[in-house]
Length: 75
Image (cartoon, rainbow, N blue to C red; front, side, top):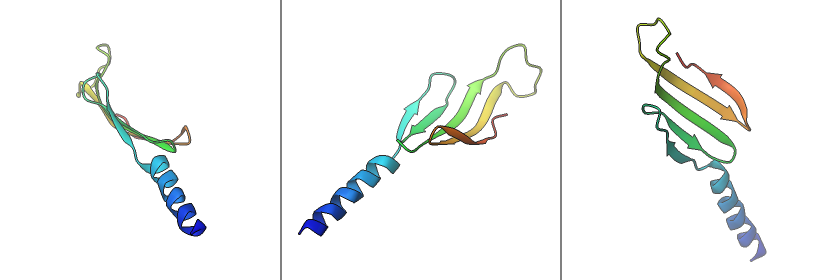
């Protein structure tokens, strides 16, 4: 009986740590997916006016695990 309760509680805790909550930012269309263990940001925002670039949007993906940036390809 105790093993079943421990297994169920472990599954619930893991789901809380892993399941992300989407947050839509008001910068042109970026979306952040926040979980306790990680954060993924799909960037789609307007660039600064002074930048000379063909695209007027910054687009890419940022992945952070435990608050440390692991991947960033925002252009």
